[in-house]
Length: 195
Image (cartoon, rainbow, N blue to C red; front, side, top):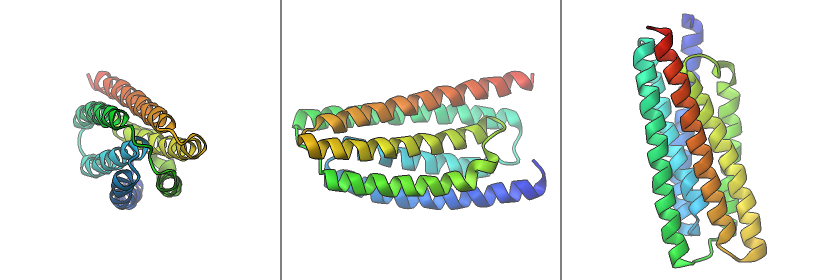
C-alpha cells in the first residue's frame, strides 16, 4: 500500500473506530434497557470491531506474518464473544422476559446507519491481507446483524414473544462465527504466502 493510501486507510480506521465506540455505548445501554439478546450481540460486536480497528491501525506497517497472527487472534476473539452472547441469550430465555421492541428497533436502525457510513469509508480498502479482510468482514457482519435486530424487533412486536429476539441473537452469533472462519482462512493463506 502506497503512503497516500496508507494515510487514507488510517483516517478511515480512525473514523470507524470512533463510530464503533459510540455505538457500543448506545447498544449496550439499549440491550440492558430493552432486555434484548439481539441488541446485546450487536453491542458485543461493536466493541469487538472497535478493538479490531485499533489493532489494524497499529498493524498497518508491520510485517505480514505479524498481521496474520493478529488476524488469527481476532478470529478467536470473535468466537469467544459469540460464546458470551450465547450464555447471555440462555439467561434471557430462562428469565422469559419479552424484550422492548421499540428499543430494539431504534438501536438496530442506528446500527444500520452507522455501518453504512463505515462501509462507505472502508470500501476502497476491503481487499488485501487478512488484516484488511478482517476489518471489512467485521463491518459487513455488523450491518447484517443490525438488519436482523430490526427484523426481530418487528416480530417481537407482532408476537409479544422472546423467540424472535433469541433467533436473531443466534443468527448474529452464526454470522460472527462465519466471519471468524473467513478471517482465519485468509490469515492462514497469508502465512503460507510468506514461507
